[in-house]
Image (cartoon, rainbow, N blue to C red; front, side, top):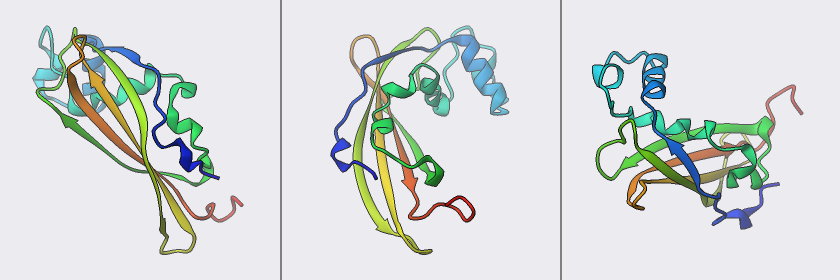
Length: 149
């Protein structure tokens, strides 16, 4: 059962260094041929690079883990990024905090109530300036998949 009182829960700050080699690995893994990610000394990070924050956080740090979602019924409902300037470059150190921004329900077309959990992660530079925000939506389906009940 999802705990709707989790709205507002926030993770402790996590430091994420933006590293040249990791930008290059990410660009290659996503099949990018953009030389801005591959060959520059201080390359700009691809917009979706910020998702690698998950490698810097422990599962216990995420406030979403405290919501009580049933992982057997979980879907990724969407991901979006908002940049308040250019994406960060290699050599930048970001501090990220994630909060549960909203929890709401909708009736599913195949029966059952779907629960939506929206998490927002803010990425700030060392001066505290907001560099980017990531908004992620997780969906718990109304029923477990057939054969998984």
